[in-house]
Amino acid sequence: MPRHLLDLFELTPDDFTAILDRAEDLKREWSQGQRPARLPGRTLGLIFEKPSLRTRVSFETAMVHLGGKGLYLNAEDVGMGSREPIEDCARVLSEYLDALAIRAYRHELIETVARYARVPVINALSDLAHPCQALADMMTLREEFGRLDGLHIVFVGDGNNVARSLAVACALGGARLTLAAPPAYAFPDDFAARVRSVGRPDTYDHQPDPSLAVARADAIYTDVWISMGQEEEATRRLSHFQRYQVDEALMAKAPAHAVFLHCLPARRGEEVTASVIDGSASRVIAQAGNRMHVQKGLLSWLLA
Ligand code: CP
Ligand code: NVA
Image (cartoon, rainbow, N blue to C red; front, side):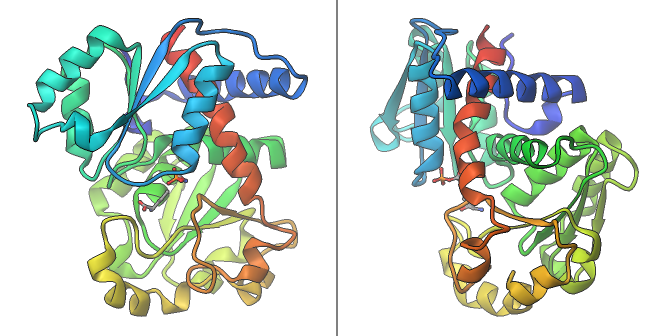
């Protein structure tokens, strides 16, 4: 059975650290101009049901650096579940590819592919999780603070796919996550209990008031209020999240060393002001850059 990465719950703390360590080594080599071909001749298929800049480009370049190739497959042409059954697609693609990354509206689609694939399947974002993003976030925090253990991350806004994976990553790394979300957008109880079972008992808490939540934050993280596929809920969401913008006043309530993170793409003037995301505390470009390095670590860990 191949190893997959659909959700960070599949990793042990040791797996998690091993991926970050590999990513760090590969990044060091890359910054010295080296591109050691760890995966010569290997292929990664990429299927995206939704738009992407970072995930697609970082996976394709990662494969080039590793000596292999990423193959972008038009989701409509592949027609998983429409042109032919998902099971057949998964079995057939396993005949050609060494791994498959999928971005899907429904997490269950990726689970079905993984059930029938004979090669590793990577979740490139679903409605429930964005594990590659959270790995890059943790790599960025480790670079910034030299450790993850004991860090306090505050996620302000929607308890969405990005927030969920961040919470699991914090638990795996010994960090704490406070979700500053309106009660209706907090994590479901069963998910929160699962996160706590991975990390320390205080690894996750919910504080609906952002200004109270950030008082001891090492990092403040936010994401769009309207995720891909939620466009019809735009009016309702914009009104529910109005008190949840990360602006300079909120950053000023956090310790002076706190950094700002965002998975991107961002909507300046909604979840974050331009002064914060383009300001000196922002690490969003380093975070996006680390997507490539961490996915190199992940691919070499899954395929080596
Ligand atoms: N953060 C992220 O996943 O970006 P893309 O949607 O551009 O891939
Ligand atoms: N929560 C966002 C993340 C995009 C990278 C979405 O799902 O659209």
